[in-house]
Length: 290
Image (cartoon, rainbow, N blue to C red; front, side, top):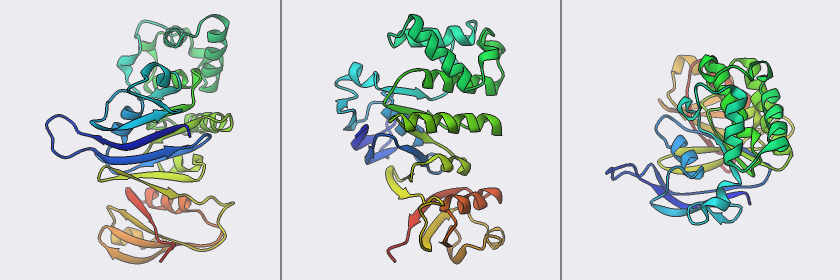
């Protein structure tokens, strides 16, 4: 088990309503786990808690069995994150100099650092920009450098906040390949997203956050579908728009529909249909037991 969140509750300020409430989550080796949920459901809060940036009021977070807030040094060595913030970079340093500095904070120097930096810059198509100061990079280039920084460090768990936001299609493919490569090496990736296309990277499950709790839903791939599946989709639904989606079998309410996924088609492809017509999906409920 790479990471576990055990009964985690986290409250902001003087609010009586917890952002995360008795949340439990387990992440196994080699998993790529997308996190979905509407705005304000706690996606970024969960990632910050798992990164050691927000201490829960209740509960524990274990990274490779090390308590993140009691054995902090040991646990943090197993983590690498990209919770992108421009202020976390030194504006006057070049892309390479920034990566070298951040690797030094992990105790990585010399040839090992140079090799890791070269691989990370190449992975995100930044070798040609390595000597340019951060302040002269475009928004997309800065975003890719933030991801390069995360993937340059060896880790058991990579935590990414909306890694494909503000990236073009080519850059998104670089992110997907990086996730796939790290997963194949046994590391796990946990990332938040509003982009349904990102679900294609999942190793089989997706996490939905709602009311401070996490629900794990199996996400079928084309290889694993053997029979028709039934799900309920919850979101901001427009009756005229959803009529164009043939998999919608029943309209339950203004915010909920039932979909049947036929043999040979994936849930991810149906969710992409919702995205194309401008519908934000907040939750997917597995109805196969019905």
